[in-house]
Length: 454
Image (spheres, rainbow, N blue to C red):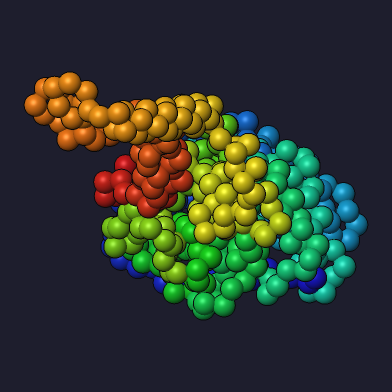
């Protein structure tokens, strides 16, 4: 499959004001660092007290990365080039797109206190560069090999700031392979400003990302649709380049890199969370351009909202289901709360299957019930015999002298489990039930509305 990288930076017009983003002044005199409004909006000093992305590798499937760049040196692994000629992918000097994405994720700046140049959102993460052929129709254009290489070489997050109109079966299988290996795939939606689904962002198993402007509105060029889960800054974003050393871009490429960086931060602090649960933290703490949080389904334009990394790292968020807000490939492993036992997809069972799956408490209840039923039958037989022989002295029934109705009291113990009682199957909203909307484990809940990065 030939793919065209269409998430390239495009020109943009500066927009005055800031709805979501209130970048604090920086102490740096470096105009590049001062121009990183998106980084400042995330309040990085608070973020880095929680996590810096240490021990997490982010694969950047792109045009290769200049690992010798002063703001990236030491953070870039050799990687692999799938373009003609092969080799590693860490010495790119022509195309700066991959270098820019890598720097937004794991740039560490330079100079005194690393105060100059580009600082990434996850400065201690490692970048695994994977170069693809950027020529339409080239034999090396498939992302099947790059995705599998990323998974097999330790990537926990895969950044895919490119789009293609479709995926072939091998590429779909590669995405499924990454999902089964618990790797979070992050894909940009594209820069056509349309609802046309582009891939891999629209593929099941991928976290689709759109872009937001500095004034808090969704970028007009950002593609949208039901696959969008998150948005991130994508207007006038400074980053590292090749020649010249720095660049400024606008588009969903940069937004995708910021989401990948945020995912790396979460994976570093919470290494036991699944990829879907990492996405769950990001979506539950996101905020929409109009200040909404906790929406129950993603909006086609802004998904669940703009990422807020500090809140994703610091808030008490239930882990949720294995797959979180991600849709899954049809042949992927069933997630917790999904599959054969999920509501609306209940498996057909024989009576023996059901009996074999009962808990010890339920079995004890059934046994006690059988004993009680036998006792009742014996009691009825004895009572019938007594009625034939006449009532006992002092009156009829069990009431004693002068009272009673002749009806034995209702049995109050040993009954089969009732809904909500001990040994009962979980009911909606009960402990052990599948998560319902708004219940612990459901997504997303509604945190208090706050400005981003706070």
